[in-house]
Structures are given as structure tokens and as C-alpha cells.
Length: 449
Ligand code: FPP
Ligand code: MG
Image (cartoon, rainbow, N blue to C red; front, side, top):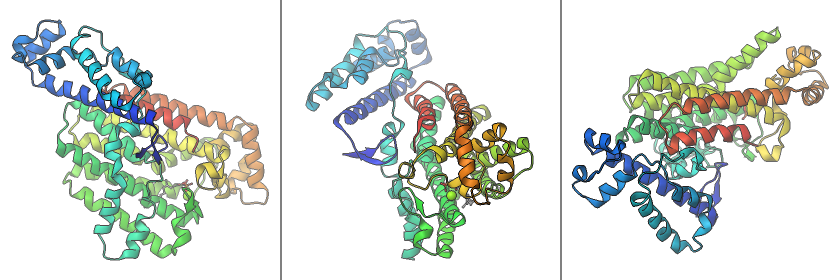
């Protein structure tokens, strides 16, 4: 059996992972069905439940409804937690379902008066709880691209990076926020979920289109462990393939017929172009340079995540405060992601990253580790200004960054943004998806590639 692992890559899933996935699903279904059934009950029933009163008169004695209702407010109980911690307490797979079923029965009918269980203690894997949504994600992108053209080569080039080998960070976090918001707003209509999926598709398509263009600009050789697109086809065709991905993504969004969503998502495109453009320039003073770097980073990386997440809130008709939580969560995750990326460029191996490392210096770019290192080693300043263009500049700058605290300071800043993202996620109603948003912040700060 194959599914997306935490690295986002398609992998063989072990029995332990399968069990974990099964338990996560069971928990999700159970929690959501409780929510659905409770919403069918009159307010008086909810008030009575809160006071632990008998529910029979509200549920017409329907056993299933009585049981579910008794579970209301319990969150997740100890049976789930012990199963999550020790899934092998049921040794044969055929016993899993029986064991879990009896656990649910216990949860529903025995532990009715337990205090709310801590959802945050469950080890949620965002890629696993989104398995259904992500499974055919890249097939859907390829179908969209293929259906838009009768020119096979254009389709082949456009599809080249949609091979399921990336981290799928953007669609994963967009879908996670969409589900966390829908739970928060108690609105999970199929139509809404479908529209939010289109926003997730848009985020990944625009990201890949920008990588296609970026690889032409950077004349890169390698991406995600394979020759980059510009290494296989000429730059004219590759540039047009990037444009083609953008145009198909734009048609898809225009079909949502929401001016507000179109405006939010269009902002991503202008930010990407301006961020890339800012990267070509530099600033004289250290302060100006850091501000320039942070604005560039927001535009080039964080805006896409922030605005895609905001769009899932806008399409769900969330109020401005909730839309802002989604936006700020995405902004912080995006900034942290790029800071970690800039740090890994100095510490990770080419094999781990699937692309050459120490690449930023070679491209003349002074990222956070260098800018922090300038405080301790002012001799870096002229090198930054001449974009590491003189012989020996790249090697010397690399060495000084490692001798300074630039890498730790970069990680510290990334951690601050991750903590802020976690705080923002906590403003949403507690749910497995909201918990997943917090796990994403951990994945971002701890990633090695
Ligand atoms: C990767 O940067 C590139 C980006 C995140 C965005 C690039 C944006 C453009 C080329 C503007 C064009 C925009 C659109 C909408 C097509 P990197 O070179 O730092 O990272 P890398 O090491 O992965 O190449
Ligand atoms: Mg590049």
C-alpha cells in the first residue's frame, strides 16, 4: 500500500503506519459524526448535555444518537489515546477493527462523563489525515494540464515537475487550513470543500510555474533529484510551459466566480514577480539589507501560502478576523520555511536536498545566514555588495558564515515564526486539522531537506 509520508513522497507504508492511519481516520470520522449529530439536536438538548442531564427525550431513544450524544464534550477519550500510543496492543490486523470497534463502544457508552480529552496529545501526521485529498492530487493537476492543450510536448514539459516527488507543502497546508476553518465555522458542504480544493490546486500549480521560470533564470541543473526542466528542453519552450501552467490555473480559479478570491489569489502572482525582481537588487546599509531580504522573502515565498490560506477562508465566507488568522498563519509558516531553506543551503548535502547546495552564494545572493554573519565579520559587507563575484568570495563567505552564529540566528528567527504560527492556529476551534496546523510548524522547523 502506498501513501504520502511526512516527507511528502510516495512511500511504502509499514503495518505501524497503516494502523496509525486507520486510527486517525476512525478518530476523525467519529469526531465529525459527533459534530454532525449534535447539530441535529435542539439547543435545549445541548444545554442539558452540558449539565450532564438525561438525553432520552431529545433523541427519541435512538440508541446510536444517545451514544454519540453521550460522547459529546468528551473530545477523545483514553481508549483512543492508549491505542494511538500502543497500536500493537491488538496483534493481528483482523483484530484491529474489533478492538477499535469495542473501544468506540466503550467511548460512547461507558466513559460518558470524562473531561474533554486533549486532542493535542495525539500524534497527528498531516499527510496521513489528508491522504484522501492528496492521493489523486497530482493526477488531477496532470489531467487539467492535458485537457487544455492538443500539443503533447507542451503538456509533457508542463507536467514535468508534477511527479509527486515534492513535499506538497503548499497543497497540504492549504487543505489543512480549509478543513480547520470548515470545522471552526461548522460548514462542510461538498461544494465548499470542492472549491477549496481548487484553491489548493492553484497554489501548487503557481508554485511549480514559478519554479519552472526560476530554473530558466538561475540556469539550474538539478531539482528534486532529477535534471531540472531547463536542462532537458530549451528555455523558450520551458518559459512558455510555465506560462501555460499559470493560464490553466487562472481559468480554474475564474470558474469559482468569486471576485474576492480572484483578487486574493492574483496578489500571489504580483508578489512572486516582485520578490524575484527584488532579489536581483541589493541595499547599501545592513538595516536596509535585512528589511529588503525579509520583504523579498515574504513576496517570493510567504505570500503564496498566506494568500492561498486566506482564499480558503474567503470562499468559506469567514469573517475578516478569521481570514486574517489564516493569512497570518500562512505568512509565518512561509517565512519560517524560507529561512530554514536558506539555512539548509549552508548545512545540507546536495543528495539530501535533491539540488546543489551553497547555491545562493554562487548566485550572488546574501540570505539571512550571511546577513547575520556580517555583524561579526564586517569584511563580508563588500562581498555582499559585489554579489560574491570575485575569486574566493564564495568560499570565504561560506567559511565566515560557519564561524559566526548566523546559522543559529537564522534558525532562531524561523522558530519565532513557527511559534507565532502555532499561536495563531490555537485561535481556531480544537480539531485534528487545527492540531495538524501546529504539527506543520514543527515539520517546517525540523526539516532536513
Ligand atoms: C525559487 O527560488 C523560486 C521562487 C520561490 C519564485 C520564483 C518566481 C519567479 C521566477 C517569478 C515568476 C512568477 C510566476 C508566477 C511564474 P530559489 O532559486 O531561491 O530556490 P531554488 O533553490 O529551489 O531554485
Ligand atoms: Mg533557483
